Length: 140
Image 1 (tube, helix red, strand yellow):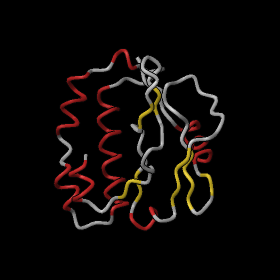
Image 2 (spheres, helix red, strand yellow):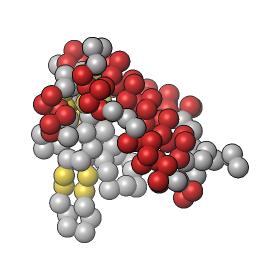
Image 3 (cartoon, rainbow, N blue to C red):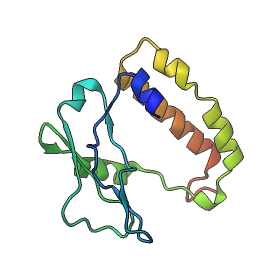
Image 4 (cartoon, rainbow, N blue to C red):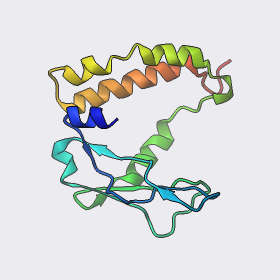
């Protein structure tokens, strides 16, 4: 991951030391949930953990602000309306791995396109792998 970040025009927006995960066995806090942004958005982006997140998870809720506007709630509403639900217990992990191995990160990074276009291609490739390997709920 570090090499990828050093070699590509993408910025880590998550501030150092922001606790996004708590290990309830050890009590240790770590930063394992990361937010990335293109260089033109990185300087306008802030990432924060709300004071009273209502989650039943060991991961913290992350709020993303661009130019002071909280886009996290907007993205959550957008995703809840259109996000497919998968039957994860029926995942074909071999198929998923084969699909991921077909994604050429090196070609994607070296392509003569803007970072936003690269991110879209990468996301589309991951979603294609998911759709081929994990059945949707309601489909049999």
